[in-house]
Length: 200
Ligand code: ATP
Ligand code: MG
Image 1 (cartoon, rainbow, N blue to C red):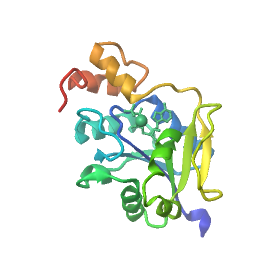
Image 2: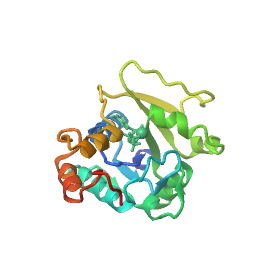
Image 3: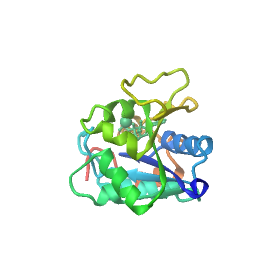
Image 4: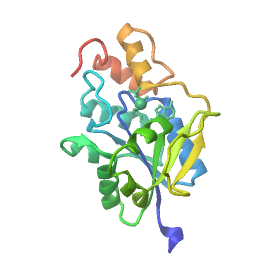
């Protein structure tokens, strides 16, 4: 019965590029919530952000595959990349539930992203679809209102000031991104000349 219900983490993100903040957050959530698997879901076109020239979905998908390949509990889903139009969390959860019938879904987000997601009008629907895991820096408290009791678990992740925005800015200036992102992602960025003033 319930002990056989797989516990699946869902880590949505633009992953432009994926960095060690994402990976540590997923790993911490997996350990603390005893998840069997964490599915990384790169967005198609993110609805909540459109920084100029978001890198093509295929590049972001492949960087996510490279970054997660060595962890047996990490997988990557194409549901958002392959769905036309903007990406909404509700669609992500419906598709992952369809791929993993009966799974107990845990949607992992940074506290900042959770605050944005909950501004959408269909937010109430989300609570019945997944448990939410809000990743915060030590000392940061979550400021979301009208959350059903028990719907959100807060998880402190050790000081990770890494952001994709900073990684892109560094790459654009020709500064190193070593150790902020996995080695294979450093090499992928260089190979495809990503973030160097032109966007594909
Ligand atoms: P950008 O700087 O372009 O906004 P980002 O670094 O926030 O990128 P996203 O792809 O937007 O990366 O984030 C995907 C998810 O990972 C979001 O839920 C976000 O809150 C969370 N996240 C991002 N950076 C970190 C971090 N350093 N530690 C923990 N969670 C993070
Ligand atoms: Mg962000």
